[in-house]
Amino acid sequence: MGAMTIRGLDDMTKKALKDMAKQDGSSINTALLKILRKELGLEKKRHTAVYHDLDHLAGTWDKKDFKEFQKNVEDFEKIDTKMWK
Image 1 (cartoon, one colour):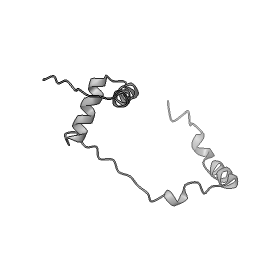
Image 2: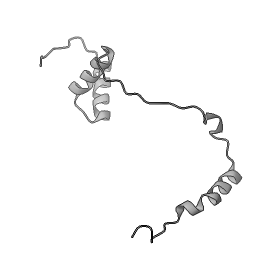
Image 3: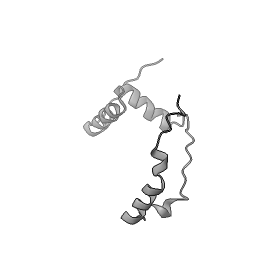
């Protein structure tokens, strides 16, 4: 492992690095390495699927719809204790 010195860091960049490290629960060095790996294309890419097929339903329920849904799923809240013995 090598060591490097970065000169000319302005206060805003230093603060952003410190904030990122604090948010991640890591050191400033680890945060900086993460940024470098990402920007150099060395970061392992995570394949996360994003779906939008239900987007048109978001925010469309009113109180009546919610109560009806709650009533229809009440049975799922019951625990069959015999099943868990």
